[in-house]
Image (tube, rainbow, N blue to C red; front, side, top):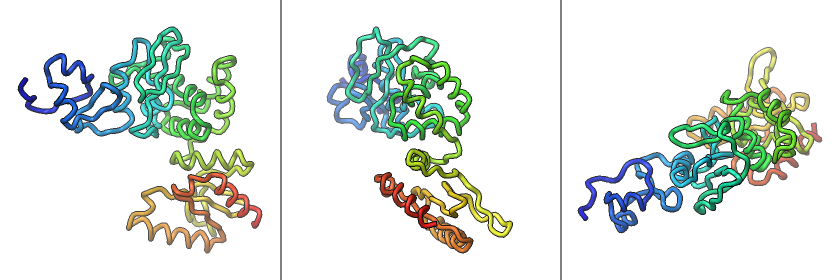
Length: 288
């Protein structure tokens, strides 16, 4: 068989491409095709994100199944699942399918009204996605996703309230009941959401995105604040460490301190130990 003149484009099932004569098994292994899930490949020129992996899973999902949960949230303003994270697939209870190892399978009641097709991928609707995220994911992960979905105006806090009110007796309702009151679209990053939830659960509820004024002049908007204690927590993502941003952050910090504010700066490394962060905040509040 002659070698193909160019790489196959798009997302495809490897065995089908071989059977149709597009390439040999050897070419499938040796060329730079990117494997998305077992047996499914993609053109390496396609940007790799979690939605691309979902497209791969969709090619081997059975009829009536859908990408759901944290994976589906990527289409609704919360693209937080990493490219290599397992694809969450919701499958009707009467459909027997194990799926490839790159899939996290959840068997549940899934009526056709809970499924839409986006980018040629069957995906759970925004409300079904919201429910499954809260029911399936760890609390901080779920709230971070819902914060972003509400912030993106894909769903509203009122929608979530009605979803909970109408969901009595549904699977996962206790976890949904715990998550809904914690949703706050003022969070501007998933890490802010995670930290805020940890603080709220510890009884240290902050004010998100608080605007600080000093002598009638706007000074700064801080991620999390306890205004009476003049304490702020700032999450510093990667963009805070650029050559341009570092001096601006330093000036801003000095201005806040000059106005009598204390600032706890939090990095991604700090977020690995939320208990330690909560303890730091608790001690700072006790010292005010």
